[in-house]
Length: 264
Image (cartoon, rainbow, N blue to C red; front, side, top):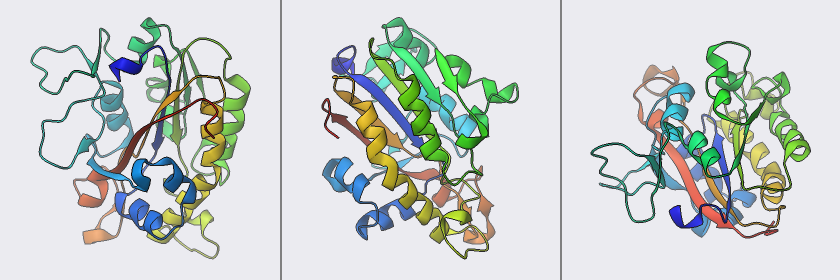
């Protein structure tokens, strides 16, 4: 990450609530062809999230604690706030002198944009304004939220309108489609479940090329971090939802890769 700073735009996408098992199953079945094209080696990396729900996970992410590889560590982090005794800073870790990566990138000359999805980015309450307030500009409307079946398209339309043409750019997108309710992506579904969760991922995959085209349209290469913030339960061991310590919640898909200018 340190070697890319300044020369590359940065795109950080959280597919909110996406389960690793569902993501891996759809990829293996050929149901997410655009992700298959984008992911390194055509595969998701299996990782553990630092928190079991959106608000806590994103505080950790912006503080430098992205999902952790499942193999025993320590594992070098992509970026990290300077902190005494940190043991996961390596030769290419970008260490920033700020409490969060958004503020750190702004100090390095990046323009920062947030396109929120779920309620913790809605800016309709004091708590919903905390994370968006880190950015130079933040955007949210109800059309970006969990009840709109075209939520990702609405975010992409807004990004196309606000993306600047100069200065290094850090774009953060929180995609709400996977989060409950998602039954509207599966015709005839009466309730949410792994099948409708998967159908929501297929919807996101269909529109992923638009996002990657926008991200690489400024004549600069772009470093992409694409992951889930946490999973969710659909009845496993009697659990429904997240903010619980369960394998389907803690295990998330992760990918990190570089796209050249106009690659999509």
